[in-house]
Image (cartoon, rainbow, N blue to C red):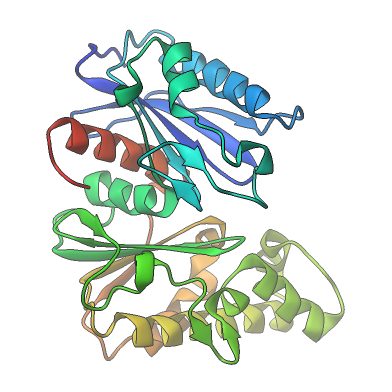
Length: 298
């Protein structure tokens, strides 16, 4: 993909274990080749910045200059200021101003380096180029190590308003004596399977057993029940037309989606799986950058 300086932006998805980078075109939010790498063994802010620079240059190879950089980061993070407040994930970034050093490394003005929440990026990617295009109200749910969420109205991510939980976050909402993340996460699936069988397996391994292991099938069915039950309670007031599921667990959606849909049949909404998968936050970072560049709120 060859893009001029006013037509493309460098985008990053900062995951819990890896970083991905690509160049995103402003027309259609098309992505160039994606460069991936695990977090550096050198657990330092300088090592992290070195990795971003290396991946960024690899992603930009043959694409020409870019207008700016947009990074999708998990929270807690001061997105307006470019400062991480994560104490447990990537603790070596806590309190570090990332905007200025990234601007210097990529030869950009600091104002051209921007940040957004990774769950919001996921939903914006689906709104711009995926399963949530042309809908008035949409919700994105990422299912993995934790549960991420984002709410959007007319293509704009919202963190408050009727039916929107505080900050747009659902992971810590009360659910069956605990919080929602206790029932809808990697550890929930692993714990349920271990309780039934005595074996601690990766979620992908449990999913692979589901066609021949009743315990594995029941674990995912229970997960779908909890997902549908929780969403039915959460979404009644917000009333989205579509809910897009992403994250690693969504790759096994065929094992739990029917149960979730059954719980949601009283609501007029479409529950579907991401069409962009790992590329959604990258496309969403591009959507956010171009919207901001055009004077629009995201």
